[in-house]
Amino acid sequence: ILETVRCDDETLRACEALVEKGYVLALDDFIYEPAYDPLLRLASIVKFDVLGRSGSELRAQIERVRPFGVRCLAERVETAAMRAECAALGFDLHSSSTRALSGAISAGVKTAGRCTQPLARQSSRRSTAG
Image 1 (cartoon, rainbow, N blue to C red):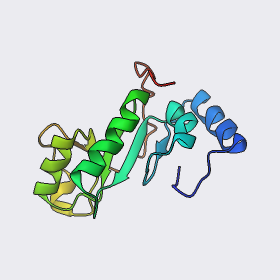
Image 2 (image 1 turned 180 degrees about the vertical axis):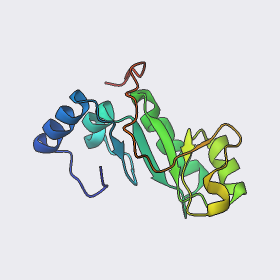
Image 3 (image 1 turned 135 degrees about the horizontal axis):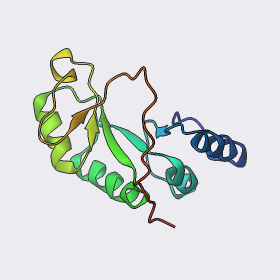
């Protein structure tokens, strides 16, 4: 779900229907606001653009969304040092446009690649938030 999408009743109903059909929702370029809590309860992945953001800012954002049971994806990870920092901050996944990093799995951070098959629903994920 793009960052430009508002969390209104129509969006929420559409997302609930998709999740019921087994789709996995990801929130793109996310910056936490309490108004998005209903979407966080439905999402499986939250993507954060890490370029130009401080470690403390990213850590605070991760801490805000963790109670919802989501996986955190660091987007635009361009160097091995950035990948290591993202792992240390607590990201579960990372994506990169840099070919050298695209296939790497290091420091417990898995690379998110393009999927042609639907992702399996994370049935063990339980939201403890709100």
